[in-house]
Amino acid sequence: MMISREQLKSAESAVKSFHVNDHSGHGWDHIIRVRNLSLKIAHIEGIENLHLIELLSLLHDAGDDKLHESKQGAEFFLRNIISELGMNEAEQSWLLNELKSISFRNRHIYTGTIESKIVSDADKLDAIGAIGIGRAFTYGGANGVKLHSQKRDESTVISHFDEKLLQLKDQMHTKTAYKIAVERDRFLTLFKDQFLNEWNGKK
Ligand code: ADP
Ligand code: NI
Image 1: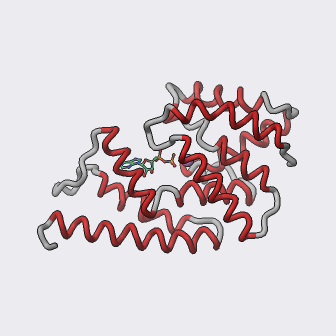
Image 2: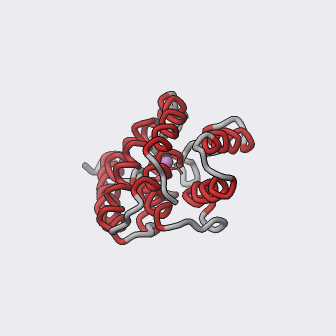
């Protein structure tokens, strides 16, 4: 599908204020990083529909249940933005499906195009490496999650590394994202080892 500059502008102004006020790790800076990283991956992978990549990046978290009062509220917000883009019904449902495929939770339900796979890769890359570490601790601070605990079953920022972040590298769709993920994953492991050494008085 061809996406125009006007459609990108409309999508950007519709989601910007929503993300600017977010404190759950989905601020406007996250959207911009995902957009830039997606465009970089697309360039290296030789994918040409950059406007679609940009649109998917801008809208990829707008319909996330976690950022809304309810699942219905989330879908309503996203459908409303899409309905303002001047697309016909079929194009609108196609776009909605693409956006749903980007979410990790939906990966077994919806299959997307290479463009949505690239945005999904960029979204996951933003959760690892130095930025990912920063986001995890920011999330912990905002949600009262402890740094770390000796208790095995307590959920902490450090346990989130094992529960999710260290698994993301092997879930990349593209070769280009996988290469970046290997570097970022190495940094996560290095950080976690150093953290635990300091915690345990070994360094
Ligand atoms: P996404 O919307 O990309 O699937 P999430 O909503 O799960 O991501 O998380 C947003 C950010 O908050 C990510 O950087 C993630 O690592 C971080 N985060 C989510 N849950 C936790 C947690 N329990 N502890 C620490 N960080 C978390
Ligand atoms: Ni995201």
